[in-house]
Length: 450
Image 1: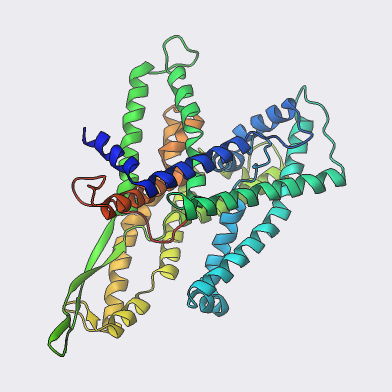
Image 2: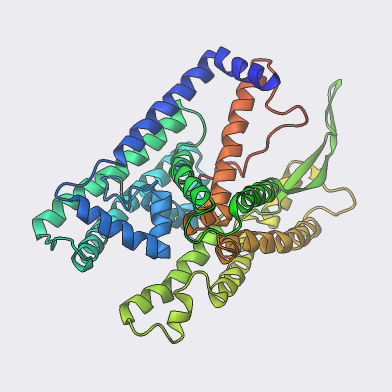
């Protein structure tokens, strides 16, 4: 009954109702665009591309983030990933280059400059990725059986590149409109929609494959129920990983100004167990794609060092993948969480950690805490990343196993928490009860868009 009342309260708030409707409308536009096929592409071409996408781990990952548009040869085939790549590059430049660090400190004007650079870099990436996508499409179509020989002229490559680039830029525009007039972070929400769009089909396929009498059926419906329970448990673990924090108490010195007392409040510094988010998985996947790509160019009989890493279900692939995630978690946490800057800000605002001297000692204390909590966080993140391989080992289908961990699950959990947090803030602002009886929903790190 309380859930029904919560939905009534959400619908009662006019601003929140408009934002939700605008979000649903823009998401509908995005999903319709995912089925608009590029000019000159026939159904046999799409079938050839879909078969290749299901066999390749990299292509399947890109197809998942694009909501199936990649395998449909859609005008939205490249999805939002070029913009995400450009954002990551600009973010890394902000950690390394002094000029970008200066723009980050300039406030709103600096943020607008960085956004402009991100858009320029997105266009550059699209100009490189679109011809590569078209060349891959032509290769797969020409090598597929019963498919007509596909030939792209230079002019065809030119105008199809423009269409693909325009499609990705339009998705980016939709994301910005959702952020401004909808609910939640628009870019993250579009990625979420792309991931969820594949869930019903994967769930239905897994259900039908477990029915008695089906070819290759193992375990029956009991096994399917066990899979759903395990998926729920993994999702709960991902929520704990995203929301896990270590609260460091901070005391602010009292100041007497006239007859009033300022300061003296006791607050907390929330240090996240997984401060790096999904970035270590993204970096590790980029590294692991290198031997897969080299092995594809080299060909061969499937033996050798490079071919040992082409199977995403193999032991060595997942072992190296796990170690890379742990290493990148420490690396990304070290460059994003800066205990020295935190200690200086505390000292400047007359704050201190009880029992710890301000300045260098505070920085060392915060650094020691981050080192301790990053280790279990990195191990847990690595385990979540390789869980799909374990799921496939126990007979779960490839499409459904992707939802048992990895980037997709962490993004899904993080975006849902961020969206629910915004909905709850609207409810609390209009003096309604929140979505939870005990405590408030906590999202990810502020400003994280994926």
